[in-house]
Length: 325
Image (cartoon, rainbow, N blue to C red; front, top):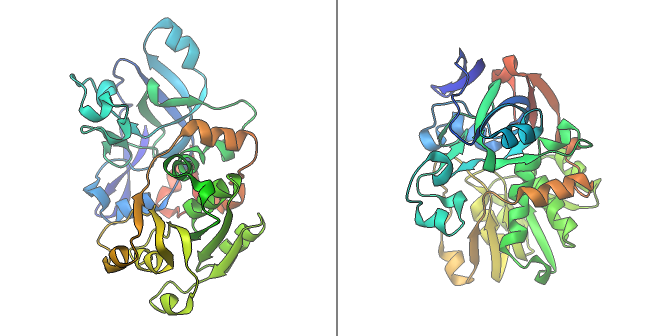
């Protein structure tokens, strides 16, 4: 099969054998693959990953190593998939303490699709455990379903916090994840204000009734933004975003960190102490909740697609572009 791997901070075309299936795993043919900031950071050295990147997808199950019932249930179905692979699916016994407590996303031995030790979606096919798969409703187009994984990550904030106790929220960033976070919080009934550098991206938020404010993305923003918020979501994908997010969080407010990037952040920590800020890391989230928002059209990610490339053109693809096999 055609695949792309990370080599010397570049995507390199290669021919690879189809993945071998473990018991209880499925072979999935890609239909669409999304590209996110984490994939860009992997090219910069994030996690020192050297395989096939990519973790946002919709595909079709082509084969299953399992029972007749499992094969009948899954083969031919369009699916999306959770990206964390835990002890049970990897064949480890006994299970680690995180898997035993139901926290597979923090499995001590986990592999992560396209991010940690498991080949991802920038290929014609991939392999995932059946327990990771979610069937996509027949009525949902591929171009919507491919956003399930990042929207689930946005919905994780709703799982971690009683968001209705906040009167309003600032979303810092205007990329794909920031937009999905803003949509998820709007669906939960919050007043959302998005801060970003790009007018065209902010205009997409305003079309959904989300208030916006333009920032420069440099040190001058802290001096120019006079407001503070009880809840701030940092989703810039930039190491400089943390300092501004701390500045914007009010005393005893809550700061949720969504960005992943290669390298270190230059932010100081004293504002966290002085303002007694609660800082929460937030990563993967509930696929069922994301699929429900997409199915009912409460969330609409389609305006975030700027262009679609074929898989063969993967090195040319950029953020918010889809790969089609």
